[in-house]
Length: 171
Image (cartoon, rainbow, N blue to C red; front, side):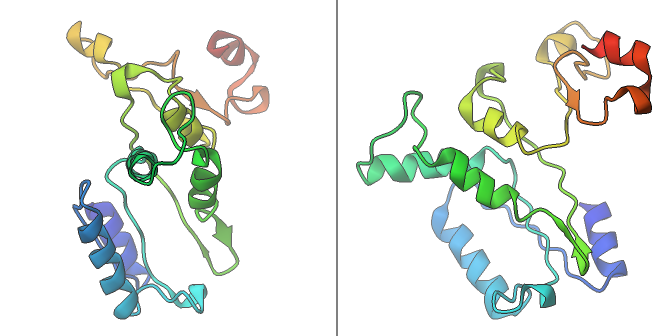
């Protein structure tokens, strides 16, 4: 949080940290306060100076799933709303670079039951340049850091960047 705060101050922005959890009303109230204070300017987004930080990127899909269930909408086979991919895409596509500035995203994703193929984390991972998987198994064995290099991924793993030998090992 300190890094985000210092960067935003250096560039004349504001860092906002909200600990909302699963309370929709509190999240909505926070968003409305940010809008009313003109930190977010929806009419002219280039005037906005804001970073939205989610606690975990699995929260939006899980919340939408719960709302879909309350509204009686048909879930997909694994319980997520049918629009998961579209909604996640529209959220992730806002993380971009323009001539006015850029957004760097470091996302924490809770993976339920350590299932990397679960639809919510898998949909999130599809939008990322790299994933660093922390292994509960390595932790229980006392192996640190608990980064699992076999489950972690990066689009930067290309022969011209890491060399042929490293690429073959990673694959």
